[in-house]
Amino acid sequence: METYIPDTLFILLTLSFIAQLYYLINYHSRLRAYKPPIEPQTVNLPVSVIISARNEEKNLIENLPSILGQNYPDFEVVVINDRSIDDSENILKEIQEKYPHLKIVTVTENDRFKTGKKFALTMGIKASKNEYLLFTDADCRPASSNWITHMASNFTGSTQIVLGYSPYYRSRNFVNPFVRFETIKTAINYLSTALAGNPYMGIGRNLAYTKTLFFKGKGFGSHMHVMSGDDDLFINQNAKADNTAIEIHPDAFTFSKAKSTLSSFYIQKRRHMGVGKLYKDKHRRMLSFDALTGFLFYILLILCLILNYDPWPALGLFIFRWIIQMIIYYKAFGKLDGKNLLWSLPIFDLVYYVYLNIFGVIGTFIKTTQWK
Image 1 (cartoon, rainbow, N blue to C red):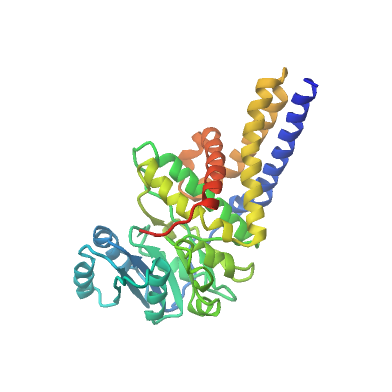
Image 2: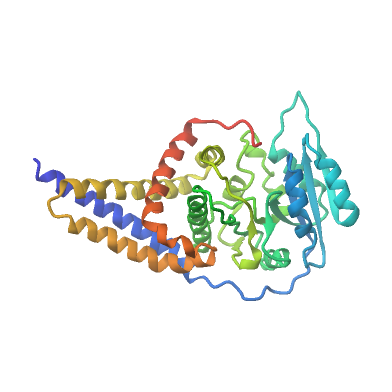
């Protein structure tokens, strides 16, 4: 009986390895091979940048001028001042004096009707004058003055959704490297599956879609009761192979500051993970299988090394998977401003899959009641 246990563990490890290899080669390699255009196509589509801001006075001062000063011929910026109790209202009015293409929408507190970010965004979308909507957050800053140009240039043919990328700034606190690693892994997942014709999410820090699509899909109506998901749930319900494009030119990034403590990171991710259970069934299965087999790969690897008298077959699978990861991720991480994180891959990849499974369980049972 004792001899069967190591053999069984190794067989299970091999199956997990094969599943992980499938995700690497079938999905992640597509982002490695993808070559974004060096220069965006010349476009002159009218764009409305939508930003929901709640108590963001400092970020509005720091980041809003870089958005209002974009090198683009026809755009407006709609900022929804969502029930702020700080000095956001006065700051926005001061900025508006310098930038007349800034439109301010104010959402006030209502004791009878509790509202969230989705309500604020809906008000901003209704107040916008243009068909093409580009979303970001108040704490985000475009990497260049050509951010709008790059994102808007993807609206060709049948494209109605453009998935952008939003990395975090580097900082010296101990949480930052993993937060950035997790952001890159998440981006590799949603960008590569979009390239494979199976888009399932986007991030509200850098996302564009048409107003027609928003109202045709009844906005956030089907999930208005869920505080999170203004970005990924909307994309999950409306994105298709023929209406979705990606944009990963470095000039099209939007940067923001990452959470600097474990507690703040936990709160943020608990809120985000809670909406995954509302994804389409095929996407839930795809993501769950990746998370589970990645977690099992490391657990079974450890058990094989402990219980198996010959560690080399198990180590061989680990090394082979690591080599494939390095081949694929060297270019993928480089495209997403994270090449310096490759050194941490063996450790952070393990932590990543443990984190996915823990937060997946937490998100299933915990309901988030507020976004800020």
